[in-house]
Length: 138
Image (cartoon, rainbow, N blue to C red):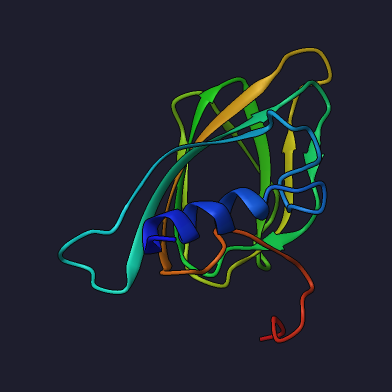
């Protein structure tokens, strides 16, 4: 297997029912991934996360930096010790590597929500890992 194929396989394998962004098969969709020439050893990954009405993700961490943008609806997010915040369509946030994302859920019980997520991770690393996970304590 080529390195890019291995990474794609690792990303898709990470989207099993135990994946931190939920158990719906179509909840997470990888749009693209690239190995930037100015960031050796890193992978840039762009994906969408779809939340059905009332849907939430279990607590998780991202080993790499993350930028999230709300495309549709509204999402409630809690990072580290910060208070919960609701982000509406057109709003965004940044997560430093290792940030504990203890709350990530659709703010609505009647409408869906959709995020566009961009992450920069080490080659071969998953974009998301469950929290707490071995070695994740700070």
